[in-house]
Amino acid sequence: MAAQPSSSAVRALALEYKTIQEEPVEGFRIKLTNDDVLFDWEVAIFGPPETLYQGGYFKAQLKFPPDYPYSPPSMRFLTKVWHPNVYENGDLCISILHPPVDDPQSGELPCERWNPTQNVRTILLSVISLFNEPNTSSPANVDASVMYRRWKDSKGKDAEYANIIKKQVAGSRAEAEKDNVVVPMTIEDYCIKSKPPVTESLDMNDFYDDCYDIDDEDSDYADQDDEADGADDSGNENA
Image (cartoon, rainbow, N blue to C red; front, side, top):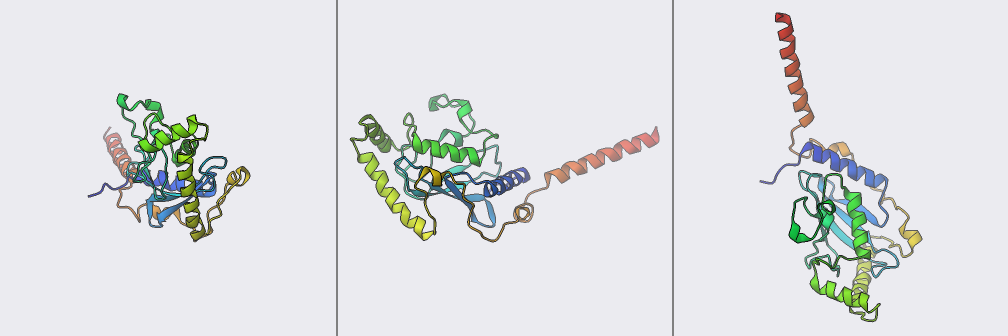
């Protein structure tokens, strides 16, 4: 049986979703995969201008654990992405999404891994940074990493890496047209924080006790405090 999300996780995630809807991250669009499930998001990523991914429209799934934010979410691209840090099945390999455990063999510093102060916004900004500058020291896709190094070392003369990405970018535009999305092509358009499409507004209160079988931790603590107060009162009367 799957673990039920904690009330603190529901509250934290509901607040993050509401904040990002009100103050979008440039280069991204976010929505719930299912309006009744807060722990599964669909992310649309616009390829950054002046990069090989310019004009691209890449969809990904962001899934959150029941103890978020103490454990990191996972991210999987639904659109085909040729990148050194994306596995063939679409899973994204990035330090910020790795659990905060001590793993000397990974080559990652503990501070580079997930910690509860991170959030969806920092994840998305890290993804854009990775698009601009892949991490080839521990690649998820070795072939893409080798091609990227050849492309970079040759200053673009070895175009195998670039040609694959250009084909994927062109293919992704059909999905953008299907979703009625205009992909930004200039830095000016890219930096405009577009609001999500106008749909029926979601009431964040719906994501608390009604949708998840969780105990109200705050109520439990309050009940314990009341019992403690009652014990103190009876003691004072006997004094």
